[in-house]
Image (cartoon, rainbow, N blue to C red):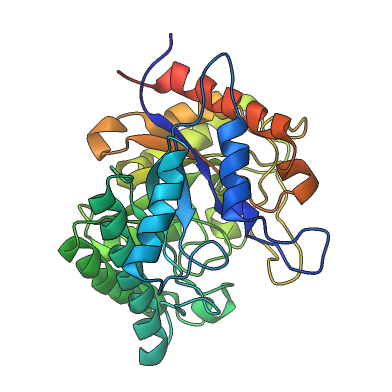
Length: 342
């Protein structure tokens, strides 16, 4: 049956992540991403809103209040709400490593402060009615973390605790996105250890992405925590999936619908990071609708009011094709019909 909730959002950052001027895949403007999202329609159903990355070229995180309000007006003009925001916590944006020295962690916390400021403007405007602020450790790769895992997890947790205090003071919640490339968050077990070390579930939870968490099962970057081996059966897959989701679902406050073909991105600086695939990719490893149900069980009680599609690093030719977004929206509707509520 069809349901009214959760609301269906599209991410704006696929127009930015992995894009580079002067190539065949330059950044796609916010205006164009909004147009493509607004153009998607399946049997009269359209996207309800967007999730939003707070960095250039879509947004200057230091933009004036009036400039942010103008962006809010633009988004609202399409009939969209804003949901979750992505804080610019990485080196090269505002932030730096949550595992770094005092200068680095100060930059990280500054990125969270800037995200909270913009969130308040969106909230006061009325275009944003819910959602979280997404972070990760911003420590790319696991080699340095492995030099002293316990101490380095405690360092990341200390930074996250300070960030969570900033968020709480601003009426926001943070969601840490588990992905195999981020130190201390690179396996399901290490992610759980970090969440428990922070110990602030009311303010800092987990963002589950179907593509990234699939790779948790296979133990990329943490073979000691693998729950599956190549050649697994369906029975083995869903037993492992239940083990992982039972551990992380109680912390999950934000959810990305996605697909993965079992490989990592493996390109340049983004080696061993999650590879997103099209919703209808014939090589996709996931039954998107069934797997979503594991994460969305009890979602209302955890404050989830929307779900978002994430498909980073698709070529622009695919992103600029309207049918791509109709296919994505159709799969999102299937997820809501199977696991939604009214």
